[in-house]
Length: 334
Image 1 (cartoon, rainbow, N blue to C red):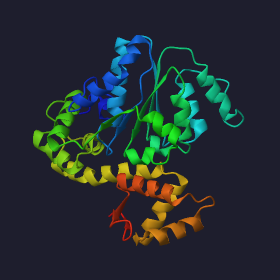
Image 2 (spheres, rainbow, N blue to C red):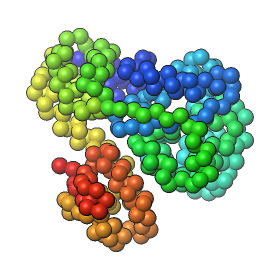
Image 3 (cartoon, rainbow, N blue to C red):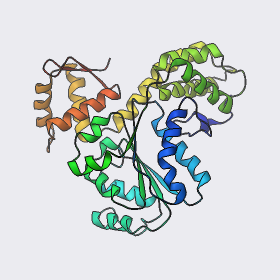
Image 4 (cartoon, rainbow, N blue to C red):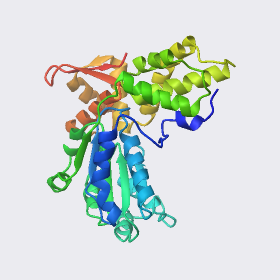
């Protein structure tokens, strides 16, 4: 039933993308100076989860590498590599320059100095979930490295730029902003059709069933592809010749829970504390939430930082927020 499991994985980058031509063309234009061996201005991709931001960034850079032989690039997930050291280490790892770096003993400045000394071909660094960086001043340091081009990815523009200092904010005004909207059902349907064609045997799923899947995904490609993957795996495990409607119905809530759990597993200590408090209370107002948070952690962050964390939880559908600033309540996701 599954002819190529790779194309059903969330990290798969297709050789062609659909419904993002404008975004690909704009990003390609921003990166065009790299074809002459020059650095490009930063680009900032933002929008809801599952709208193709990461895929389009990697697809565009990969396509550029086919045109430009001398080009290095590295993808960094700042939710996982959120500290200054981890981010720099991952960037250096992209140019194979970490062999003598020790996580416990090498000073952070050594990593930045080594990156500044880089003299290889143009280097593109994709910083995904960039709002998760503990120290946004690192972006200023990276911006000043002559041969390095940054592509920044986040859910919301304000979550990145609200907490940076004036030096960095003024530099990043040159960044081209690309906003990604949710996919429509028809767009998701055509994306799934391609994944079926590339990864499944002919005739195992109908067009109507693909429409069922997209209607449950709410414009989120991660959910749509995840449901397709899990449905195919479940049907295979049960020795079915086709994917049945019952299988699809059963895997939809499982897939959403799976994606939610992966997100929960990536939460930082402070985000986890906020999530736990809201989940335990069910519904809670901001001040009691902040008070209990401060009692639970040893190094509480500012209220502005907490608001950013709460916005992140909301973006990933882990919590709900209702009301305006004065009458806001946070609610555990049903």
